[in-house]
Image (cartoon, rainbow, N blue to C red):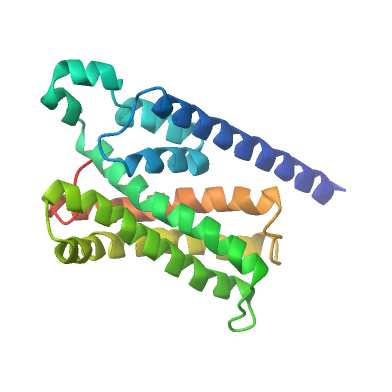
Length: 235
């Protein structure tokens, strides 16, 4: 009976967490649509996706360190007002760089896990390991795309040079993020539940939310170093 009560409470927590995340994502999307657009278009994707996995923390990060003035006010300030945000602490710049990487991971994982549910891949007797292959490939491709469309306009490089720079900027960061995710999902599969959770269940996606938070934690120090040495761009 105790186990059943705990399971019910966990499912309830999952629904609350997912509902809060969707609401936070909606707030960010509405705020962007009413005129608080980002100076780099890719960040208009990054912030809603961040709120989708980080919930209230993601919304706070957007409101405190990512929200831009309304377009009319920026235009009134002239070109410099349009392109400059107030000075921010380095840790916040690292946070934004990490969420930039994490958004590619999140979208890739969302697509890959849905694909894995329809076309499961078994490796060493575990569909979990096959899903990880799908996850990494999809996250890597999207992560490189996100970096490419950040680096190219900021550095004014050719498409080839921009692609090489994107690979350098995102490979270590994305790999660190995925390792944090994989570690947690392995604990979920082999320790907490001892079985694969249905990918259509709120519990699975709640566990994925937690995995994203841990992915952020493992990728953050990598992004700190990448920004310090100038491999990644500050946003």
